[in-house]
Length: 120
View (cartoon, rainbow, N blue to C red):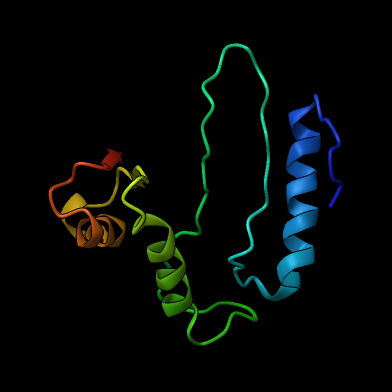
């Protein structure tokens, strides 16, 4: 990882994220709980930490471990259980929101939906 390097081109940022992801998980298509930190500086944005978590998956693909669903669920819960965390649940428009596993998981830790924001 290139520490303290400043990028001004977002395609270079994307490439660096891909390189770091490959370094952390290799070609296994697995997931890692080790975050890739990215700071965006601008006088026009708030000081905010965003954590992009992997999507929930049911079936392992490629070299993923057989318990990938459980690993991702535990990782997501470790972040969204923090009462200071806002939960952004993204649901594809073609999915019935009543069938959203992500929304169900958010409701487990935020039953009154005070910290949950849904995006379709």
